[in-house]
Length: 397
Image (cartoon, rainbow, N blue to C red):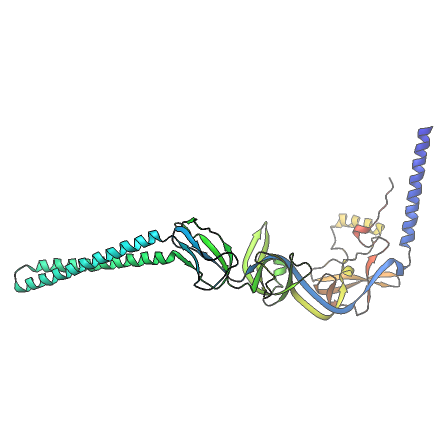
């Protein structure tokens, strides 16, 4: 008996809850139109289309300073954040081996000069003897050949000396531009080898008063990006503060990752105050398009879907199963770019087809359709029947 009583009590509670819910639902659904539908008016104003992206701040021009010769760092004359001028001394390699090579080449030049003088004397003497008939002409040919070889040997020795002197100058590292040192990658006593590639010693930014941001824009948005468009961005170092920028370049080389195509867009920014640092992450907003004083509709009105009558829904589903599916639902964007909104006329929803332009977070530009400023559009069904996600269906099993 206790088990039966408990089952009866649970059944009674469920019936009462379902009855109360059904009463509330029908009471809510039968609410007056003015209370049931949330309305917003078509008005005139500005619509600003913004493309958002992330990127890193970098100097407009930065130069990596390396070395063309191998050696050991003997002295450093610049450090992080050092201001340098073009041609200023940055570092010196140990010159011992370079000085020895220059000395050897100098001696080779002196030896070649002495050999040339000897060859010139021999050639002149041989020419005189041949003129007097004391020796054969072939001896003169040999002397001329030796003179030419001595001259070539002297040129070779001078070229080697020039090469060694150049290597000696390369052991002194100088700044190629005026700017600030943003990175130093060597220490005193470190050996750098330039056999296969040029080792990096310093990174110098030419002018930190101008910075640039390399952002990645998806192919769906890049069509609206043009050089000269205004942009603004923020960085985590200064919460709530926005900096101004401008689109400097839209690079044509695409980047494809996981079948997603994007393009690099360069945004230039002023840094005359010195607040921005290289490498900071920038959250960029590019103003891709702007319409001022245009007729606009709330985005919520475009997203609104009218409630579906269950009987009509079942009938439509059966028809679709028999004769093939239908088109997109109410309010969906069509092939010609049109969409559907709904007005409230005598308590009934009346669909209106409109053509739209650009959109921002709140409004969409209206470029066609039978709507005027002040028209009220339905944006929500407060009875909970304003869209597929809010429909309540009760089924009794």
